[in-house]
Length: 112
Length: 116
Image 1 (tube, rainbow over the protein chains, first blue to last red):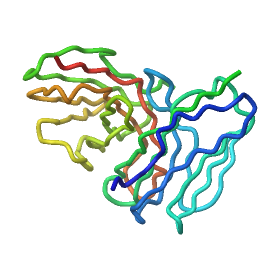
Image 2: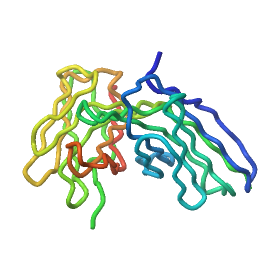
Image 3: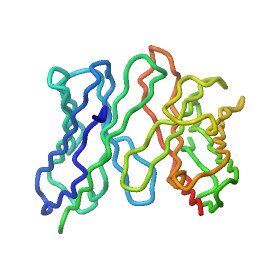
């Protein structure tokens, strides 16, 4: 079993839809939770960063962390064709050299 | 403020050869992590350097080695290349590696390595 599980998709939605992306994890030591966006042939770009449990909102993006269920989510409101990319969840523990573990990424297509 | 840069952009090597990839950290950052991203997969942590010392290592063999220089730029060296080493190699810089940091990392565009 992988430490971080993420559905690779692809996920295809119409423009304006609300997108829900999710990851589950098995290591209860994870404290830092991130979402990255990666366009084709580019490096990952940090979208959202959350420490421990709770919600965080930034514009059209909302990140949720439920440590009791070992489940994190990213919601994208009013999705745009420019949101079409691969979304990677990532997490790391407080110790261990801050080794960050990534999910496999979910490919998202937003159709105009 | 400049972002994370990597060189070269693309590289083709043959099996058994050695390769050196380079990374310049974002201004003010003293920690560099290297990742391997195979096609269709998420990045896998190789190792991290903090103030020129290796600060943590993932599940990669010793033929993957690194250096960090006093200006916090970094190199990834891979010896005895294998076909499975073909991947996008990413470096990410961050500020600090201690308990008080936020652990936010900023990635470079990557070097695409092809091993034939």
